[in-house]
Image 1 (cartoon, rainbow, N blue to C red):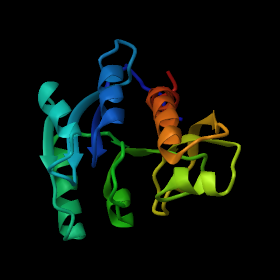
Image 2 (cartoon, helix red, strand yellow):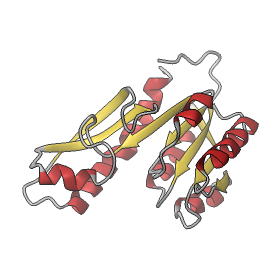
Image 3 (cartoon, rainbow, N blue to C red):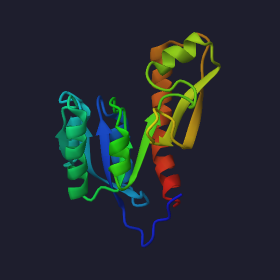
Image 4 (tube, rainbow, N blue to C red):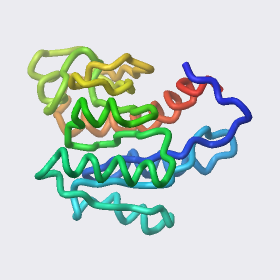
Length: 193
């Protein structure tokens, strides 16, 4: 993993699309003395994302991008990230797929949190698919982002037991609680603190 020399917090951008519960958890984590990150920028593809309120509340710079013209937009995002000296991107419920071009051009680390035990159930509707297959366990995974969907090297995973009368909503809630705990641990592991 990456060793922090002279220990300066890594300037981080969080990419969101929705409610921002993982963003909230990461903001709280970033304020701890031992945290290896500071959150300097928030990117969203959704102007109605509730997570944008957290940016305002915590005085974090934010920008909403319209992803219809993906390559043009990605170049704009890369320019903004460079301007703010961003070294780490954390995808937190971000519902767009970053292109190989973006991933290659970003001179830093990109992490994602996914609501399944990868390599099982890449992509969407993870909880419904796990239940349909009568899985005994589900969970969440933090992994490095590469050009293949949900296929980057796994950093950490957390298992969640699926109860007898589990619904996709009850499972989603259980997994989300673990996501909030797992993401900070994974970041610490990445920077080997």
